[in-house]
View (cartoon, rainbow, N blue to C red):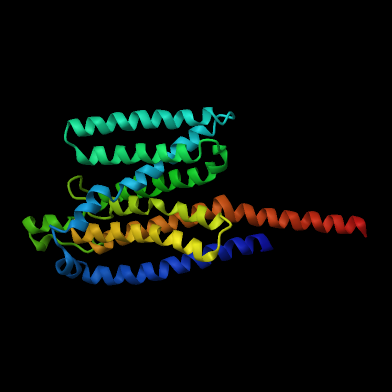
Length: 291
């Protein structure tokens, strides 16, 4: 095994250990005490739970909207034309927001409104910038959205068919099942895993941007804390309102970090290590020629 392969493997092993050890421990605990946890903390009138239901996934959609605008905008070489896809997204999202208000769909209005506002703010701040610089970050966001909220969450929900805690109130607690013994495929019940939680963790790619910036470590930590805090708040809000069990949000959270680690590896670590080795080889060749 050469030096490049060793560094790549060490990165994956180190981060997967940091992820999977607490994930496995919590999965065992929640597998044993999921129902007891919900019985203890669920409050159907919780303001936090209602806030998470309405706004928990909105910021994630906003970041996805920005990323899509960047990806399509970066297809243009002219910096001015790069903003055209963003303009289209703003117009469409505003139209959907108005439609949501007309039909009294607060959820539709909130999500489309956040998408529009997010894209507007990004355009205003980065109007004179070349959006090709942000293309790699945008792809990480879009791929995370595809692999976690879209594929993993939606497919697993249907295959597992776990009944939500709030539905057990009417059906009876004898229908409760731990995460490792799902009832089976169902289009009606979709507790496991949590979609809102997956969208709450859609802000994780921002950590990549923060870490790549030349900032003091203390500043980086201050910027990262709100991202982690938001993901945790959304996760907790889904449990306290009775929409999900603790294990539902655990697996959505774990998958979000797992996918991000892989994406960071493929977009950055592998390329950086290869470039480092190539530079060393060039230096060695130059030294050999000079000698």
